[in-house]
Amino acid sequence: FTVYKTTDVAFAVSAFRFLTADVLCDVATNSLIANKISACCVEKSSWSNSETQNMDYIKNVHLGKEAIGGLSAGIVGTIIGYPLDLVKTRMQTSTTTRTGGIFHIASNVVRKEGILALYKGIAPPLLSLSILNTINFTSYSFFRELYQAERGWDTRNALAGISGAPIAGSISTIENFIKTQMQLDNITGKRFRGSWHCLTTLAQTHGVSIIYTGHLVNTTREGVFLGAYFFAYEGFRESLKKHIGISTQLAVPMAGGLAGATGWFVSFPLDCVRAGVQGRQLDTTKTTALGVFRNLIEQKGLRGLYSGISPSVARAFLVSGSRFSAYEGALWLLRKGNDLTDTLS
Figure 1 (spheres, rainbow, N blue to C red):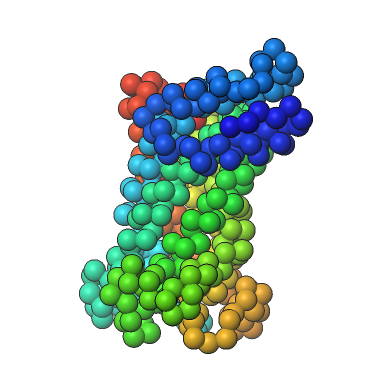
Figure 2: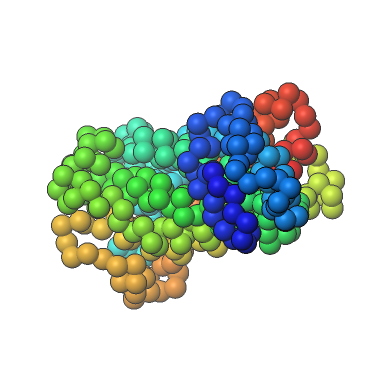
């Protein structure tokens, strides 16, 4: 970990490299962070005020606890929301304009494919989203401190969320690709016995690079989603507490649910294009994000960009509410009963 004496931008880049490399290596304590900071080769007396201030921010971030909170959020949210995610994928990739509602599609899946089909392909998202949420919540806390973001409707909260998108996209692209292929597999011929079989089969047939199909559009979607997600959560959380008078214990899941719904609504057109790119038949001509966008407009009109929005918003509200409750609840336990208002602050 190197301390640069040039600009805050260089400092942020260096700090981000440190975060992504070492955050999971010391989940229980912050000793790794403290040791690396104390071992810096530049004497503190030679730092500028802004550099000293930035280092203080880093030392105040409890990355290990944030990581455990994010892990809890990932596991709980994935298990609760996966069936609705499957319904959303079926609606997004349908070639007809009339796909039926949420309950119509879900009942058809259960009747024709069995109830376990609602969880087909859950292994990759359960693993990757656990890791992804660990990284997302940890990086958000880190950048929020770095940018000196305030509680409430502060645009720096959005910037802190966006800053974690590149690494989030590198993980979620693989998860989304395998998940989408698995969710559509029951329709196209049941080629895969499971998620790992799907991954290895596609990699052997098309090359390892196939697992990063749709990476650019997915990473862009991550940036839009995470920015809106954390911006809305911080804003709604404070508004519900201060202007409506709701307790913290109730404000957290409500704000989390509203944040999830907001994030998905804003980023949904990009997710629709992503599903089209990653859900195509891989033996056919390669489909670009722009090509998928054009086909959606031609076949379904502008409404095609929001195909499957109903289960997504319902799922987002349910999952994000439980996710933030699990996250803040885990921090509350790790901080030995400190009030929830202290978390992420």
